Length: 326
Image 1: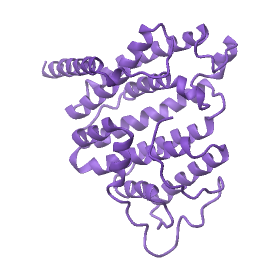
Image 2 (image 1 turned 120 degrees about the horizontal axis):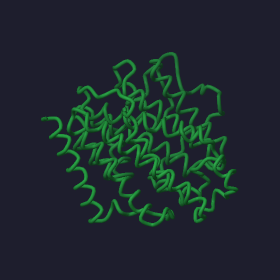
Image 3 (image 1 turned 90 degrees about the horizontal axis):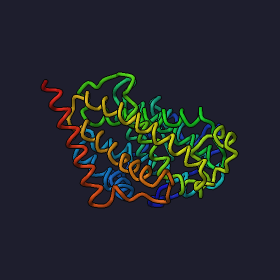
Image 4 (image 1 turned 180 degrees about the vertical axis):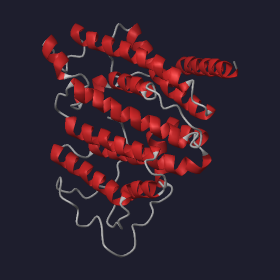
């Protein structure tokens, strides 16, 4: 669904069968990945993410943050660009899951690709039991597995809700793990809602492009009730769905920003507000255009959009600072 640098093809395994070449009983462990590779992948995929990591992430966690982002960008891009057959996509994800479990179990590895070694290095850096990093990795792997399986088929409302849950937990836990790592964060019911709202908006933003590649971002229950073709994004019924999701995203953003206002670490709060502001600009455009989706939304790239987002972030931070003083 996004554009990535094309990387060498890793070996593909038969689904649900262990890879005999993935582990070994003895010998040297897989060597570390080229330390510049996570940086190269991240910068090529998203300069905004690269500079966010560089300037906001805790200094001791920058390399791991780059690894965490780069590895899943590679996986996501590989699933989209290189594997058109469902069985191959599922086998690829199964390999990544097996690799993840092997590393957490402390097994010695061999025959992993340069990109897979990014995951190996990332997991080996995780010294905390039940860490936010492990939550990020496992939930993002679930996101990748769902995308690998859903391409070309309709999904249910339950699946859609679970999909957003995986993504929301992953991103939120990564935010707190890498930015303000040692500062406690609130564990309250609204913890994941800002990212839930962003994910809802992200799916709306990418709908037109996704439909052309076989990803359908609305549930079959809605399609059945409305007798709607999932590709008919210009229909009035589709606009009803877009309006409903936009309103839900607004509600989640409001609650999510209330959560962010309680986050102690200022850099973490700023990163959270910046993340949400990008997507709120997209919602503004969708609402302004009567819930008719279009192929691309460039508000976040132009000057006026950037200024509006900056003002929004600064206003929220200032209000949060005043509340903290009162």
